[in-house]
Image 1 (cartoon, rainbow, N blue to C red):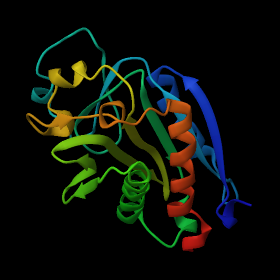
Image 2 (image 1 turned 135 degrees about the vertical axis):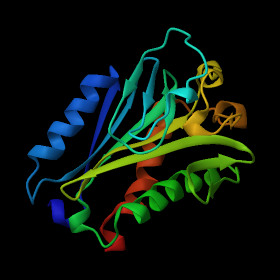
Image 3 (image 1 turned 90 degrees about the horizontal axis):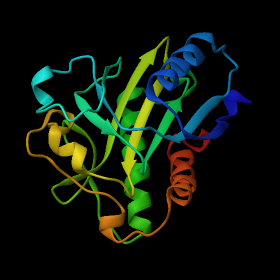
Length: 209
């Protein structure tokens, strides 16, 4: 079933960051050749995550939010309530694409979701994520171990954006950040999650094999 492109979707609610990260690592290390891919939808309490190459100067000031050094690529970003986090646990050895193209397909799923609402979004060369005008609406970061991915993407839906002002988001000083509510989308997090999963399945699924 795993080889057919099946994707098990788990809606996990609001979970602390570190135990969820450890669960992703454990899942990835324990999976077998026939383990189906999984997609985890959730929110995190307020937390900054710092990628492997992350530099301390991108945290501009301490506002009381914990900083967790983690094993994905990229610099510092923020997770908090009202942001949809999608973790993609995919065996790339069974796919006709590798990690760079997977990131592009993830970006395309977000772009297609926004297009459904009449919002023109785009990717930027050398800066993974999805942007509306000059503002970033979705951050992406993956880790691949033994040919299998974990981590994923974060899409800002209806959240307090103030914590982004205490960092250089993804390492870019002064980068503007936006969210779906401010772009006129009134869907709640659960509805957006369902729609995004459909686009991710179209981009990552067996139909592309």
